[in-house]
Length: 384
Ligand SMILES: *Cc1c(COP(=O)(O)O)cnc(C)c1O
Image 1 (tube, rainbow, N blue to C red):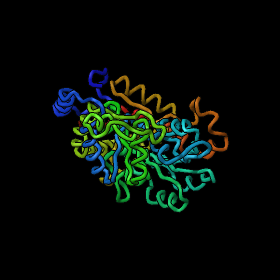
Image 2: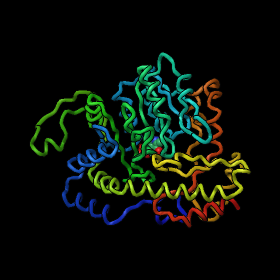
Image 3: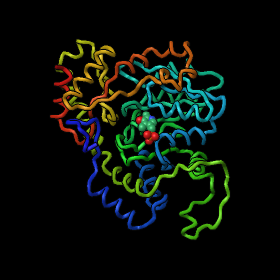
Image 4: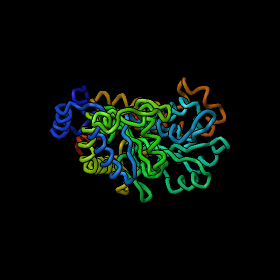
């Protein structure tokens, strides 16, 4: 990222001496695989989210996969989820031989899953709702949690955009039976590749820990310390273990999370102030607030919605010419080749807002190392 050709990059890492020293300490300890550092990271992360359990894993995709498996979702089951999402939640649904059922978003201004659409998508095969806190702002969790409770189905949060944020009086990641976080390089808490599952349920935590490590009843770490000499395999698990280097980086990043999320919020507010002073809105541009009027959102993305796809492409090209990196969050999942069979014409018909959002969304640079001047340069280029 730092040596990329961009004048203003889409995202950047707040890394310094702290991360370097934490990594060195792990290397010098010569214990690289999951152990004491990971345990500390999990404890600190659980405390940050306000949940009983945090289980560190290889990445956010595995965090989702393990959540589905621990909840016992499987062949023939349906998971209701947004179509405006990174493809991981839908891909993992297909991998457990369940079916993704996409529900539409609230509006272009509020691109999170609509509780009323969740209710319409319910069938007798629905086993779970997997929401995604788009851009770092909470979905309508009060209503969604109530729907899941009433219907007796599981609630999963894809909280990959929402680390450290909250909504409706609770942290994102503390609403669901299970929640998945990603620590990929461009996320608000970044270690390269890494993830976490959070849960308040003791039964799920036990299953998740087992599934993470081959279903084995003891860890290499326990055996190394002489606490155990053999093991049973209680269930058919996977290997989704994080390592100590990543956990050490995660602990340092967690210390910086509050400050960096505040910085993102301040920059998002500056962006909106500047954008509102242009004529872009009168030309059909929409700038979703994503919780800018409260301190709950963690502003993972700075989102603009162009009047149409052609205007978006022209804006991207112009910004690129000026050395400003942009992206699209996300292409419409039902249009991916791998999902053509999964989503029939009827189901697509019910996703008009999602389709429009995906066709017009443009993500502008936003990260804690950016300056207000950078935001001004982006807005000036976009509006010229
Ligand atoms: C990043 C991300 C994921 C996947 O996380 P990885 O760590 O890259 O596997 C899943 N869902 C959302 C919304 C994400 O942003």
